[in-house]
View 1: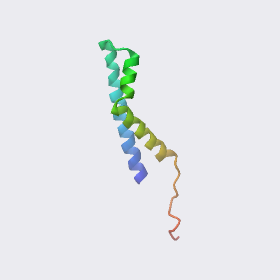
View 2: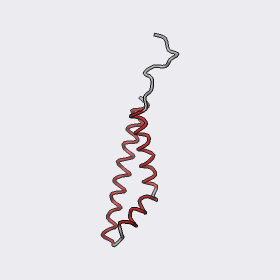
View 3: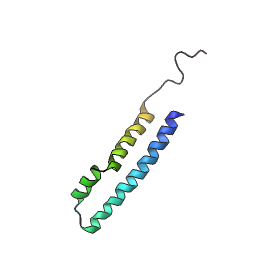
View 4: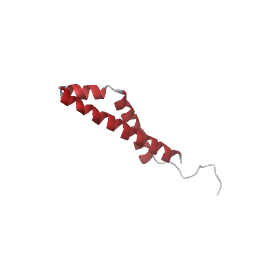
Length: 74
């Protein structure tokens, strides 16, 4: 159950941060260069939160855990 909650929270954070980062592309219409925009995106808290959430999603999907504890009795 913990893995499902972590997955859903991480997925929600990824959706929010990516939509914010996409909105930064509107700076092109204000005359900024693509290099400046990507530099800005890489140094925002949104990008850091995106990377952190992506790592948590990868861990919740690909890391195997035992279905029951070794100390439990059958």
